Image (cartoon, rainbow, N blue to C red; front, side, top):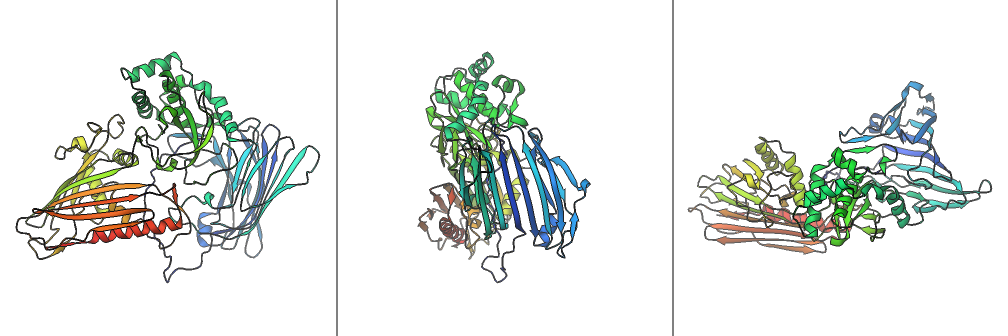
Length: 639
């Protein structure tokens, strides 16, 4: 079902014992001893899903954290029946789960912007210890399919869990054509149980395990899986979605009036589209109501305007109606909002998010990403397989979303002005003017800074990079000491939510006793308050010596320029050497120039991955770039 969870894709610091003397053999928390799944599919797309599971707990962590099993279902579309549930102890005793230990609850999503009929049947197992086995057997009857007359589902067997034996059996009317995508799982059609039916069996045995690697892609990308669908092609999927969505985007008098008011005297179609996008992004609060078929069917545009809120489907519907009121065609684009990137070859609506495509500008836009300027889409959407659902003049088709868009280039720029005082204190200011996904990150970070806590936010940044001192930061318009000349698109916004203006910010800082003056001595170029997209943050980007799994990665264009003014009684004896390092995935350069009694430092990192994920070989190149950055930031000048 379609939903959106706003999240930032951050670079974190992996911690691993890989390659150390303390690294031991990987023991998965659980072993899937048995997982037998049966689908009984009916002609109208409704079906029964039966699963019989036996899971052994291998570690104390599993005993502590996995003592329950949860069966998810839709409260309005499904019924659930638990057929059996018990524990087998290591000494082969059977302990049945008491009836009052099978509980029904919401699906655990406590976001205040989401309302769903998702439910969970929780099974609390008794007598667990290392070596114990959880057994449970249940049936879910899906009485109302999401798309009438159609069936689709995907089963994944994550290889971070050991799987000894699994099977999937499908029975369906012979007249219902099914299509399959099997990844590392064997099987196919078998003899039908009776005339008029068709049957397929797939099996999985003794799957080798692969532990998770921090920051890698979702296990669904590299685990055995089986996708099943009755949709013959992607155009049919688009038609099924639009069949219940198109009429919701009608240009009513209320829609026309609002579109005319928003665009006013704007004549340029691109600027009209931007103004309409900005309005929807800023004025339609994101609230997901995912109950029954509302998971796929949007509300009418008039109702969305009146309510002032909606989910991703509603955002796309209202924006489509407003654009149409100005003669601009658009379509929805189904995509996944998660960390999985592997494409599907079988057509199915296995997506959980929808955004907007405007073919007139060949531009994708996501108005639910509250901090995304027009022409920028969030990191988790870039480079992914997506389905343009179609509209008059816009054929439904499968696409790969762009890694970047020319309308909003992803560029990070920082200029810092520092002074080394006669007492060794470094003071300074900086201005940061980013664009594209960097600007989106800046806006989101600033929106989380409460008024009056700017110094604390700066302190947190400095502490993260082991910088001693004090500082503050503020939107560019509130930092009068620093000019905003680098913001080419006009006067900057002071509110990070204001997408009608570019957003930049400034910092100021003081670092007492940074250096012994007049020397002799050595010192690195001071960082000050690091940028939110700090180049130095990439020093710790590649801590794992080797990776076996791909990682999400996007192109980087990050440049930082620093001017360090020196006291008159200090003489520079030597500067750090220039860096000019490049490999197959990018380059890093750093130059140092002595100008009168000031040092100018220019650092620039460029990467150009070919896709939204980087292979283990790409990772080694990223790691080498990280080392080059680290060596440069540790370099010192002597005086």
